[in-house]
Image (cartoon, rainbow, N blue to C red):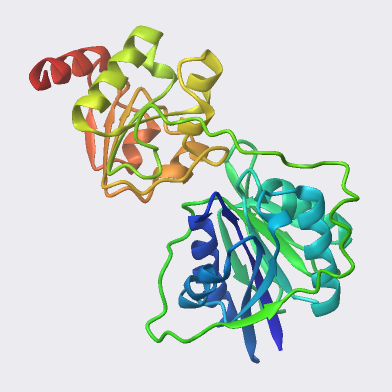
Amino acid sequence: MKKIWVFAEYANCTLDRVTLELLTKARELAKSFKGETQVSAVLLGSNIRNVCKTLCDYGAKKVYVAESDKLGLYNPILYSKIITKLAKEKKPDIFLFGATSIGSELGPTVAADLKTGMAAHCVDMKINENEQLVSDVPSFGGKIIGEIICPDFLPQMASVKPGIFMQKELEKLSDPEIVSIDLSGINFDDVPLKAIGIEKREAKCVPVDKAEIVFCGGYGIGNRENWEKLERLASLFGGAVACTRPVVDEGWGYEEQMIGTSGKSIRPKAYVGFGISGATHHICGMKDSGLIISVNKDKKSPMFEVSDVEIVEDLNDVLEELITKLS
């Protein structure tokens, strides 16, 4: 029997949405194997039993649970020790992680401990004719998609950013099979790194991955003054402000606002881009938006190729006109 595992990221009493997206994708991958395949989740933390039902609803037939007050705060050393020990005992064929701040640290650590490889920040995955996991990863700034295979070592591991895959609940729900992870061999006190608390920074505006309408600025936005106009326009609509990498480099926007292969993937009902060239690594992060509107004075901009509405105008004029009409 083939085994596909998904790390269930649970922090601040919240199950990260990428977990449910990965479970949905794992069910799809399971159908590609000829024999029986079991999808399972691995869950660590404190007061987490109530989460098991949700994991089951999205495809986990079995949930491996490590529950302790000392696991309430994420600790990369403790978490990797527990997960590595479990993986060596149960021998999964595929192990998937979210490419979040936690998953991007924990996944490669576990992979190194298990002496296997890991494909990071995948945009798609499939099973080939040899029943191997094939991970699609953007390369050369997103200009090409490379296929990564780890044929000689198990588990085959990969990480995926939130928003890449859809999440879909099972139609026929059942109670989860919960397996407690043996923690008897884990010395919780002999750890050089300890988490003492969580400091949360409140978002100033709607998060880009939760907004129904997103206003995105590229390098063509030109200056901070225009960027502030974009922020003003987004606030008038109750939407979110997003950006491309050059905007972050200029210091106008923040990392958490960045869309693309090295940022976030979004699916808003409407996406409005200003001064965006249309590089592949950005398009990968917003191509599934409902309505795509682009404003660019260059009528040959590649961004227009994926847009539903094309506005060939100076973005500064468009921003001022919209703000004037809405104020």
